[in-house]
Image (tube, rainbow, N blue to C red; front, side, top):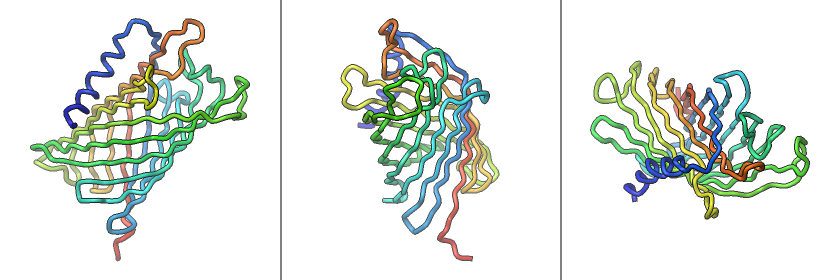
Length: 256
């Protein structure tokens, strides 16, 4: 099963991207993100997350994403979680999504299984996420009013790797390398299975076990769900830029 997932991550995006019948839209992106798992009981944590996604690195909006969820530690290596995501997509690029003229809202519910393993000095973290999505639609282009909600679902697989640069483990006040590849596949859509792929590579610094800062280069290839109205060709976004990620967690179970 793991070998199949690796093949999907590395080969499907390249196959889809090589198709000739497509339109491409390149954007420079800057993602400024926060992630925090806050422990509230021996095996339970609250996940909080916000992503401030920008076009032209910082000049204008791409998306705003807020997420909250509950995390259960099944074992020291395996976590189960579920939660809610609120996403706002703004008009950007040469081919705004579905001729988007105003910000568009999306509600999601998600379920995760996440497990970690140590391979030599590499810390590997796998995550499989299922998402149920409700995307707002307006019958009048350019109007903020949402008349209906379109339902869709997808599955995501992410492989994240961290490598210590000082010693055999990542400890406080030390740098480390970080990278991930995440593949998104639509469910229930035979003619449009591929959704997007994200690849990131960068460096991180661990101030403490619960406070880290990461900076990396981000490459995103996304296929829009709708065809270009004028040419009926698929639209692919090729977004490149960087991500700054703050990881901060609190432990509410500690007693002073």
